[in-house]
Image: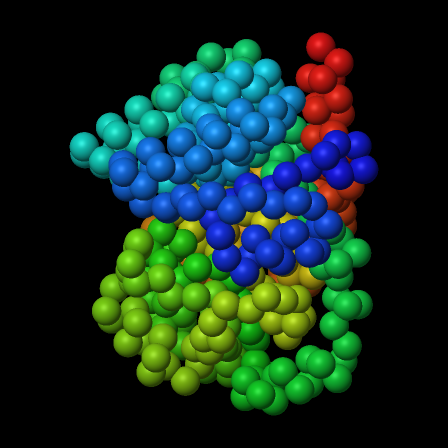
Length: 361
């Protein structure tokens, strides 16, 4: 985008924002935004964003994430920004009930009312927004086949991880050549399906005879927002076949030493992890939620299981280990099906065309 526009990135302060500035070669602005419902901090964020936009006078403001959405869209509307775009890449409110759900529903509607265009990043999210009447249909558009950013298949490629790297990493993690490795990449929280995943893997471990498997967890534990069950944490810490490596900046080596992704999340927008795994030639076992069930085609490049169903998850994990022909048949399609539908350059050009059409109008 910086080849066609002057781009300024706005986010909470921190090392990540500095990394974006350096890696992308763009100007950045740090404005504190809380991930929780914090009215006083949120008003301060809104005021700071309004002053920034009033000064900069951008033609387009494009927000991502619920908090940046409500702050950015309200501030942009107040500042008179003509094109106010919001990408919906997941709805945390899907798993919320009671008064908090009513508050989040109101915030979502207010965000969409303040925007001039809404981009759900999957067909499932598009349908959910229509069903719950968050906004008018004419404001909505899914770009390309879905996804907010697509996937760089030249970066996420098995060729980018050497044989020597894989050998060293397997030795470090005590993974044998005969082990079948399931990998999960993401935050280790309840709504990512981690409780069900750990139960499924633990039950699978108890049943195994001739096959041996490992579960590789790549991601950080978040105790504050959505903590795991105590027995889940206990199993992660004490099961020798569960390997938790924490957050990793480069996940490619971990995909490269794995055989299949397991991603039993409760809700997603359009999960990058599933596309990344596919580009790294891994088939996936995913939950039947929007995004996941658009990337994975049943029994072609993976398998889809019901949400929150640890027994079905275990069955599919067992099948993928024991039936080698079945495993190979879904593995061989994994990368081509990502290349054909979600190559990053295609998504970028679609977004660029969208911007150009808006400015032209």
